[in-house]
Image 1 (cartoon, rainbow, N blue to C red):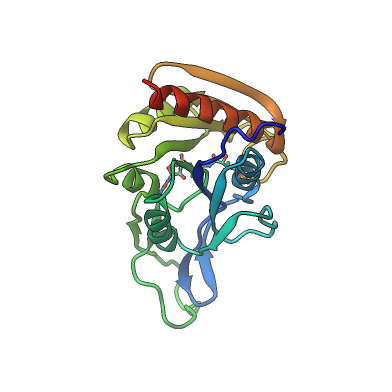
Image 2 (cartoon, helix red, strand yellow; image 1 turned 60 degrees about the vertical axis):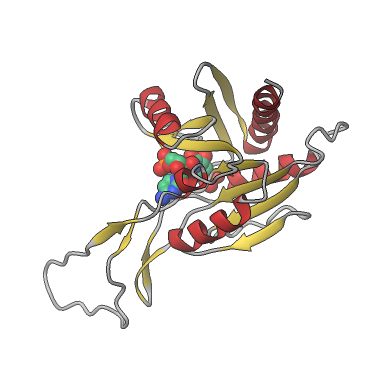
Length: 222
Ligand code: PMT
């Protein structure tokens, strides 16, 4: 990173999973390790950006030099994202946010008394879509973790959530996506697409950060 090409930019990156409590000892979550989002934060820092990393619970260390905001639930992440996105130039939503939370979290540990049980879930706020509604919205980059119809679903999210770019992640393939050390992505804008073939999350993050900046510059010099 000889060239600090992101000097003067402020990136907010969300990373990791969220946890939705069921009772004091149980939760609903997913397999996100935070590796992809942390690699993006690291690459943006190395390129000279100020970076705020909003992270769900993970076991890896944040890159030194970023402002780390630790959160647990999707609603916590939503609150912090809206707060910090107001000042940033670029928002990258790499977190695997729970779409639903438990309607009523039990105050005490739920006892095993019935053969069947049902837990009612209610929809969480969509963080990236809500940041994209801000008056001075930053340059918006989402991810789409898909197991089928990747391009169609990713393009649907790009439009519906009002994003500038979306990185589609095929999470059905072994050796990439959730919790692996490597990844492959396809970056979609409204008019084009770029394939980033399988490589380490560190490498793909470097390529992605540079590509995001190219699109950002193109938008801001129009
Ligand atoms: O953390 P790793 O183990 O390294 O794995 C990386 C990853 C697979 C988690 C990552 O590459 C990835 O694909 N992240 C997006 C995961 C996801 O939940 O995607 P989605 O298609 O469900 O969501 C679409 C977009 O909306 C994402 O940018 C997501 O952050 C955002 N979202 C979703 C729901 C919600 N309530 N708020 C959101 O902001």
